[in-house]
Image (cartoon, rainbow over all chains, first blue to last red):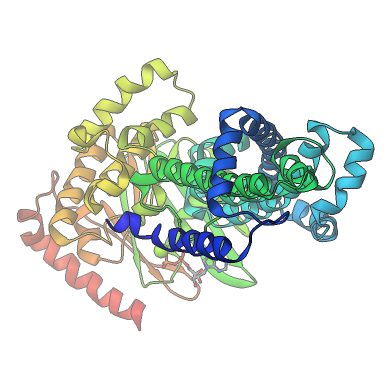
Length: 254
Length: 256
Ligand SMILES: Nc1ncnc2c1ncn2[C@@H]1O[C@H](COP(=O)(O)OP(=O)(O)O)[C@@H](O)[C@H]1O
Ligand SMILES: [Mg+2]
């Protein structure tokens, strides 16, 4: 029972919206009742268009996350271990980091044109920073005793990174991944709404332009479900990976 | 003077950290197979002494020698057992995996590792816990695991920094006897840091007491008690009682 208690509030909200809508609005180009939105969602799922668009958004999101995440991870480890690198890169990072990734959409479009590349580039830029900062943070919090153990055993730098640093930082890195994945979804959909004609963001724009609010709300509902499912899956993965350590940080939601 | 029987030696070692003298004028040599215990007040530099020998810290002047080599970096010949076993073990590896790390470090091929890990775990009584993670082991078992891991690199010198300080009395006694047995089987040279005078007397061939601020050798006493040592007989031995009385006054002087 407890598990399902959380569903009560959204259901009530939908019900109130449905009743209010039926009682007041007869025809609308901007709003649709939940029942029609759900109907449109089911229809879009059935005809395959929504799944195709989801796959495109997912590709843009994962492609960017992979590039931005891995680059951020590598840079974070390097900077986390080298005072020289930290000093040398500090200003650059602080100057580049505040640039809103969305502001790079025009530039990215100019360089790559429409398609996956421009979206992936912007998602990569957006996720690089949290990956970098959170990795640096995770590395800084590694038990220094473990690094000492690695030194005493004579592990090389690469072996230390692979056998000590990465697994020691893994719980925090997984939290970082969860946060970065949330950001990746936001940026991917934004890129599609603003300039890239594909994926879920574009689907929303088409629904708006063709005056089909029920499809728009249907897709919005889908994006919400998609984000929730992604987060739940990552949380399960985290618990499964680190259960025996008893140190999963689930306090930070994406 | 160091000769071919010397396992390691401190020769005129002086160490400053952050401009403050931590250790001063440290001169002593430990013979191969000797079990040397270092005692002293908290903060007197016992851990730092051990870190010098492990190659984690360099002396400001003088030299630390391992056999006929000057120590400049950590060496596989020297293994360290820390007091804080829960921090020194890898929480994401099982007992087997933790011992394996030392074998991986010295380049033992994967196929040979299992055959070397099993006897090491057996030696410290962890055979039935080989697939458990450190968090599933008691404090005493975790410390046994750390000892097994330190033995895996097949060191000639074993450094132990208050290894039993966090354990209860019974666990402590059984681990003391295990360490004595392991040390004599392997003819290992041991430098054992403790703040417990009786533990030092029970284990050691020699006790080295340090003064504080800065750390200096206050007294070196040979412990000619018969081996193998026995928790009851040794601790009731008249020589044990005499040495305890003698060192007790030294300890009082040190803590003053
Ligand atoms: N890295 C360091 N920098 C400055 N001082 C240190 C450092 N490490 C230890 N010390 C100081 O050296 C002294 C001896 O420390 P330590 O060897 O840990 O003592 P013990 O193990 O006998 O308790 C202490 O006063 C401690 O504050
Ligand atoms: Mg200490």
